Length: 103
Image (cartoon, rainbow, N blue to C red; front, top):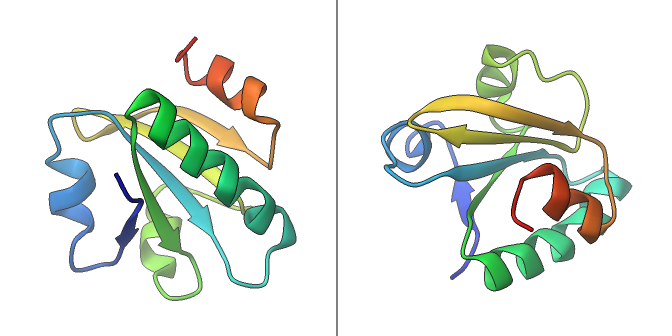
């Protein structure tokens, strides 16, 4: 699997209409912690089969605003098109896995 690059054009289909859980990472190119958490999310995706999408907040601020995201990185876990969990900030892999309930 490969992380999905989310845009305004594909967000509804990839996240809101997806019948599987989707973790959306709100990130920005200039964000150091975002660069740190990216490879960790790739490992989680490969090991747990979780669908992960990356949303560039500079390119798509309207989606960031829709969910009240104030800091990057922020990760929102969506189930049935609704956010069910929010994680703010870069965290070690074991903490992310535990917070996402993937253990």
